[in-house]
Length: 182
Ligand code: AMP
Image (cartoon, rainbow, N blue to C red):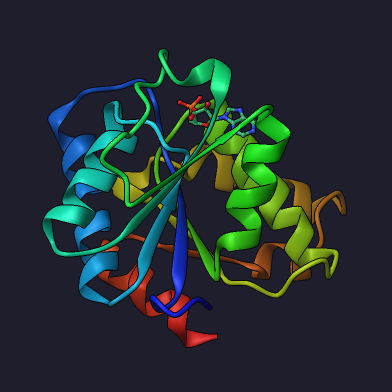
């Protein structure tokens, strides 16, 4: 934890612009700020990533963005971020996001979001770190994935203890609560 309070890394989409998802991201950013925490993000100012950080700052919070140099144009680097770290590679981006965070929230997203979630999650169940990992299953967005994982648990591919490491909630308020519960 830094002098600025806990840091919460948020993984979310860089594509869709549907109002419902932008609002969810904004609510998440504002709630993290209201909880006195810093938002750590991928450093883009588009789609849900952008709504997240703008709302966090709008609510008086602090944001740290970490973006690879080659994505600065494509993901519209968040130049208003309190701290913007430019990395050479995606791996470096992800490593810094993970290291700086005291906990993680995953919102709806695409394969980039999944990749980030799964790496953090496997790290948790393999004992690499002990940080809380929360998924906001907004409106059942992740139901197909969670259903498949439950089937894999029944067939022995995924352990119960691994599934227990992921805190699945429906709302932003429950996510903030989940980060502090463990
Ligand atoms: P997506 O969920 O596909 O919209 O991607 C969300 C964010 O994840 C975007 O900022 C992507 O650049 C980022 N991302 C995708 N793959 C990786 C990766 N391997 N390491 C770090 N960030 C990634």
